[in-house]
Image: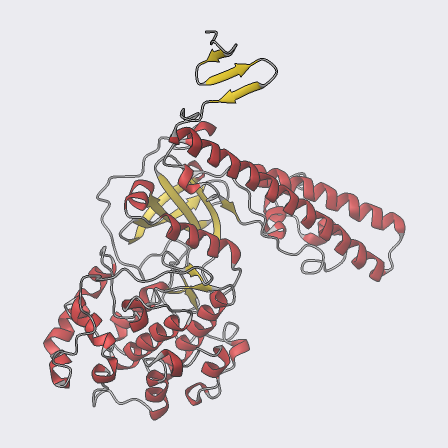
Length: 515
């Protein structure tokens, strides 16, 4: 409709001669949902080109590395050209593998081995290769309603970023309309909690081995500026050989972010009431036995356990990496004594004990532990200023209790304890869970691309990850390398000539392919 000033009105737009389009200031041009979808599309496009450019740079580096190696070996120019053609063919195959979308339909869901407040952990088998993984399945609606989006994002980012033999490896992460999925390596040895429930207490030699491996694991994430914030026995998992790996990064935080605890906001945790009477804080033996019987149920509850949390976390003060070392001190105490130092049937009492640790940290007459072990525990369960590890991991390693520990060879030597594992699908070292929800659905959950822009999914843009070990990917593909005999995965020697190039020519890359 024409206005008196010559303006042609087109809905919310004014079009004036010689001036193009003019937007009414008081009219919203888009709904919140539209703006959310636009932001999601923007992030998707940015991620796509970021990963494309990263992959391009990595391909150039691999080519230069192969050229240097060939020149050092002084092979002929014809052989060099052939090696380059082989590399290009392998790179093409690798990119094809990376472009393939991974979804829940690619895995056969098997036994449940863990349950938590927001989902479950289930054994699964890759349909294409038969490999066994652990699948962590999280319900999106629960994550959103309980404000856990940033936590699951941090967990995914840490697992994708940190490549260490001390932490559980992530192979894939993806999502469908209702769930988030993390496909990780399966460690059949169970967790330290299971070991403690079986053994009650550990010898100092066994405890020393696992505390030392825990130090290496915690330090590996601290090096990447992450704090775990939930170090406890059920997050320390054993592989089939008995070596320890750190898992469950749902509460981890990047160090450069400011945050505080939200636990028990209305409680006066600093109350000194009754602290003069130390006996009032001790648990009778009957209550300790009851606590031990209930510990697994508490671990799976929504509240969780507070037994290993540092006082500065509970007090909502600023804190850093040193809070993880307090948790390790509490675990070490439990390994040697048989229960955590501040345990109670009432979480509020536990919190008050932790905050009043000067009064409540006691060592029983039995079992007896060495002077060095007690000294280390006291230098972990203490003020931040005097806590070992606050000034670096080396001061922890230098403690007399670790005398004789070969830190560089811990993961090469025989473990202090070897769990019983009878096969790839063995779950005897994990709790048994009934299939209360019935068998997993066989209906494909992977919908059209438009589902990515559904309102609840925009919170999880960038969640998808595929571990891109080019060596393993190329060797497992077997494309164009099959003979008339049984299928055989090609080796790097067959791909790139008679040279040992596995580490120098094609290093592991961590390209992240977004859906």
